[in-house]
Image (cartoon, rainbow, N blue to C red; front, top):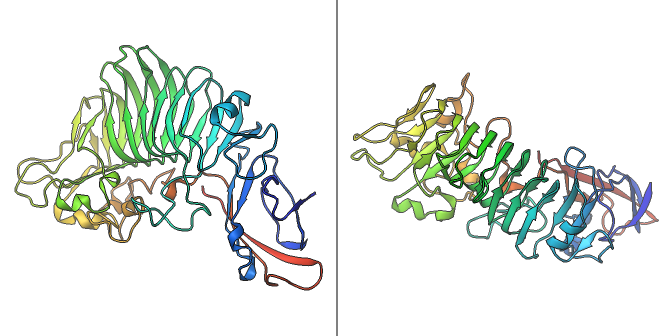
Length: 423
């Protein structure tokens, strides 16, 4: 057991803090050597010591390496804190974790070793445009990307909690791109034939997936699940197989499409599968180009999808001029366009919902029973449900309180702690 000053921003992150009796000037608790904590100092004088705490930690399932921090606003610690991502990356060994704080320049890095990159998430400010979520993090700041390239040697790397920019998957396998916002992912490297496998692209918001026309490249075990999709088009000159499941495409070309902003909608109602051998399952496809049935535009078109199996997907009725066409598969449902407002909580009108919460299934939604065995489909269902605000799946301490008030008598204070797993 060690003692840390209560307001010491350089103290290690605590894996957990047990409720108990503590000295007023210190917290005595078990700690994890990985990580750090943020304390909202402006709230220290509130009744019951209500604190919002943002915690990033590299839990054992992600990393056993050292922690590097970029942009940390406390007193820097030699060997831990760096002013730029490049400096932290150069100092890191394979398996290390780099924690990035709001306010740093957009990340631009070629990755050639196993690195865990953890940011705070996105859509965290309910007053932002598009609208974010309240009370998920103590700080609503985000960390942006310019370009991140995963090349040979980066196997096992994870990137989460970031926003914006372009990701290249080169000759690297076992890469996880999770809980990021507004990212463009190229599946194969530029101007080179590459081979990779086990690429996990999950729980992202406004995800754009493409590939270069690198003849002969291949990617196996590709998993694209529980994302809000902006665009998907892969080149038919490459070979792909894997799973595309529990995603949402929502295109709106009507006047209502401006509601919530174009950044909360898909960019097109066309999906190019590039000849890949995919299982396309439990997805929701909403094309709301026209609000009436007197046209043939309310459907999604699939290009190069002859090798894909389509199971348990839902689409809006296309109109009198044509029908949604699925490939080989079972359990696919078409719901009348009159149900457009009955599928999600905030579509086509976003109302009071955040940009991502608008795609939660509404009570009574036809998508609640489309899956195998009458189960729900879409980005908030399945094995890895989408997480509001893309908060990384690591523990956070979001409230500390004392039933004794701000200034109890004596030299001890009772501390109660609330934690959230963010799984």
